[in-house]
Image (tube, rainbow, N blue to C red):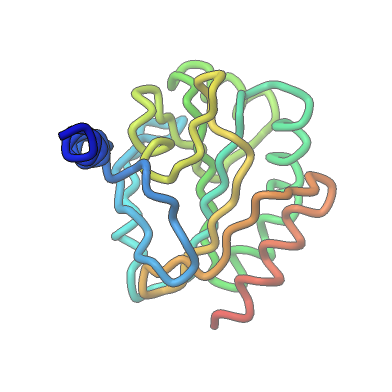
Amino acid sequence: MLKKSLLIAIVMFFSVLPLAAQQLEVGMEAPDFELKDQLSIPYKLSQFRGIAPVIIYFYPKAATPGCTKQACGIRDNYNSFIENNVYVLGISVDDKESIEKFANDNEIWFPLLSDADKKVSKAYGVLNEKGVASRVTFIIDKDRKIAKIMRDINIDTHAEDVLKYALTLK
């Protein structure tokens, strides 16, 4: 009886876990989402399907030193992304106003998306115990499959590293 009760409890526990709790892996289809950027322009991951690779980088908090350095590295290399038809989307759980100020203060014109309700961060498994996104980058191929997951980010070379990998997907 005890074993049966334990088994039922385990099954019930795992059945109520959201799909987002599953660890995403290379080769899986990247979860679609729709979020607005610093200019209130909506972006869907699915809009890039069949068009180009997409770099989705999650960052903890706008205007912090590491996140600023990472975003400015992409900004400084952004022409290379555009010339090579690679899209970049930065995502944090900051509200739109914080992201807008961050983008304006640092002259960041690529899309920084607000995931204030944290649904996308949860779906990608990057929401940490502090309630912010961990610094994780997903490189998504043209078929919306996860080609690479980078959890150990070097913010000094992040832009170059992700572009170099994305170019192998062409």
